[in-house]
Length: 243
Image (cartoon, rainbow, N blue to C red; front, side, top):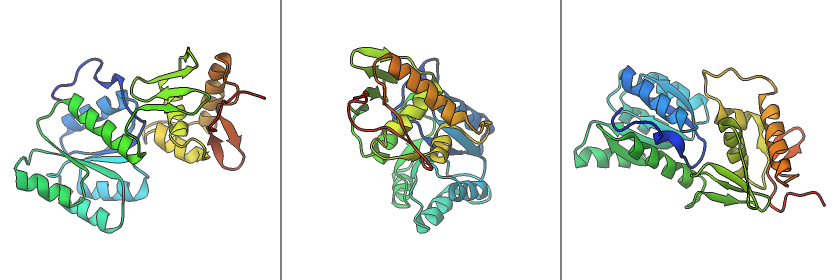
């Protein structure tokens, strides 16, 4: 993958569930590896027919879509999905570089268009931008009162105290923080944090939340995540300490 290298995937703006549609096995695997290292849950398919099936059966935040793919070409996939009021963000990744081809892709419903060959750092930046747009945000810092989570720097702080989380713990907390003030279903958290290839234990999310709570409590934030029984979890907006 052009431009990929150590440390490229160390920053991201929000954990997303991403579908990569690319018929080149080498590029497809490289994209999956790079986006996974950047903290995203990534599935991948090699043709348009599988792309249609996956896009309509899984709640993706973003699809990275090649146009010259077998079975059903990418532009047709995009048009058919948009006709069904499918609203995930789409980043076209194609060797078709003429202006009229790029315009055609954008008018068919793509949110962005990147020409091959490309630098992975640029692709990741475009993915991050679409992630911010999905949540209506222009900055990467989320302050909910109890703690501050910086999606770009991938840090969590309580006052001046930095809280060290594992990549998966950070993914869970960012998923909840982006929806602060509203409960998030366990199933939605799983979809955001784990890809299709991951084995998910029945209590995996509960275990991650428990660990996050312990680490935040040690920094002085004792009510950062509340349980909404029968629904899931919620990050409340406020101080996050027991009164």
